[in-house]
Image (cartoon, rainbow, N blue to C red; front, side, top):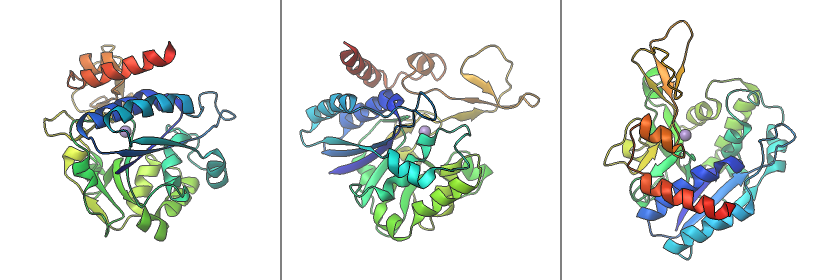
Length: 289
Ligand SMILES: [Mn+2]
């Protein structure tokens, strides 16, 4: 049994489908998928929870690979309001949904060992290779952040893929400390930095488990996170380029997500996951019919 954790609003459906379809392609073990969501429509009309009906469609899909797999949706709106209501980071570039994972310790059904995944990941290999790491003596296992290890500190991890030891995290109140920090201090990468700061036992995993920059054959998990390119930005109207600074255009960022088929092909020249993305599109069409 492999325990997984995802978080987000109703917009995560595309990413969640691609992630799960790719995972079951390579891994036939039963999956116990926990999804944390919430309803914050009072703050913004887009802040809708993921709905049960869509989750069922996905659950049916993953049960074709293993009938014992299941998806458990947790609406933790009230828990979030109780713990995060006056957060200093509610109005920065990250949506409040980014903080949902920091409440995982408060959700009893989440087991002692769980693999947290961002919704912009695609599996290129069998995730049980990652899940089987023994993290008994660690807070979590994670891969170093491609840029953070250079620009922030040598032990700075990317929080998009984390094998969490919830037992230790609960005992040592690590997420509670993270929540307190993101609620009181405005930061550039609030939850990721908090997760780095309060863990004193990190197991550093090989980069193939959170491959952040380019596709490699060995990738077990490819993470399509925002990346920086150093060559000059000439402002030729490439919609996937975002200049980082108006006056210092030596680098720009690229932020293409797997469900953006056009961007994957034209910008990233990535065709490797086309079969999975096609499958996700079919699933979505079935839902809309
Ligand atoms: Mn990500």
